[in-house]
Image (tube, rainbow over all chains, first blue to last red; front, side, top):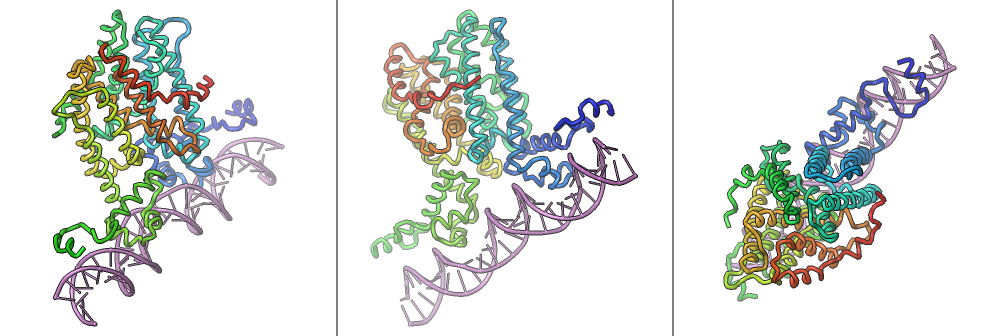
Length: 242
Length: 242
DNA sequence: AAAGGTTTAGAGTGTTTACTCTAATTATTC
DNA sequence: GAATAATTAGAGTAAACACTCTAAACCTTT
């Protein structure tokens, strides 16, 4: 470690000497608590207590609660943009669509507190709001590019107008899925959503493009979609009294 | 008014003698403030101050803040269910779809604070959560019935499976639309969403069923949809740097 | 105009919150 | 191993919150 110190004598931020820096631990614990209880219900004191550190320590690493959220936001955006890329060296395949969805839904799950309190987080921080709008526009154009790729690959038969509409519908369904689940389907006890209900989101997004599937790929894509049909579990609920 | 008093001597709740009861004024002011600033940012003291009444007075009429929200929730549900009805004496027409959407979007706008903090409101009040789940199931079945009606009227060509998927997608887009607008499109200054951007939601919902339109009605419905195309205003934003 | 119920004002309470300050401790460098 | 800088602890603060309590004002009926 002496070598390390020599190699990076005046580096600004890397505390490699420690296994995990306090800063990282704060981010990690914040993410966990925010996801479990909602950002609104988790105070900085809670986070500090959870980590067995003092509030002062927390505020040494982050100038305020907002800064923690900001950092987590950055992680989330980086991760999503990493996923939404069209390969340049080959055509898109049916499984690609699935991989996109699984990756994005996983990301949404890991940072689910964000979309739970999104409006409050953005409206109380104009700078963050600006970043997010730019992030959305980037995602929107990436998703359109994916749909164009699926068109080029002969999987979808879509006009440019269809693509624009599909992309926006997809964005809304995807980003609203967990909120939808928590509000409309989950009773309090079933805290554990992930496996099968998350899959329901993938199924639901597939329904958006089903009408546009080419004959050639209709069967294979529909079969793919059927794997994610989660209905029995929650459609079983009594379908409303009236 | 003496006559009124004689006619309804021991009625439980009507304070007809006054123009507007304090209870009504509290509900009205709460709704307004919640919508403008978010439920999270409006305290009971704020509401009382806004009305120039004392906090004690407010708590005389509502045992807690939750009770105010609960009452507003009731108004909202009643209004939506009033709209989502299939006429029994005639077939559905293209304009019906439009009327459903306009009515529902107006309701969503008037109670927009609800969907802004929905998760928190529901997760912190199990009873309300239960009611809301039932409300959702009712709405879902009503919307399906509307789609079935559009099928019977020869406007849509849909299987029962399509209907199930369409209904759910419609629900999610509709209930998420204002949140989507506030998060992704609005800068802070343009506080006033209503007219044209609300219309964008109607357009967007129409896109869901466009692929299912029968040839007979495709032109008329698409023309109807085009009226609600709001794109130029906010699609003009630079489409992301990449 | 007295009585009795309803409505209101307004001060106050206990708790929680985000955040600050100072001093102590630990690492790093010379 | 002394000096310096980076961390941490922990008490503390001012503001905001949901909500309570008591007494006064206001009706309505007799």
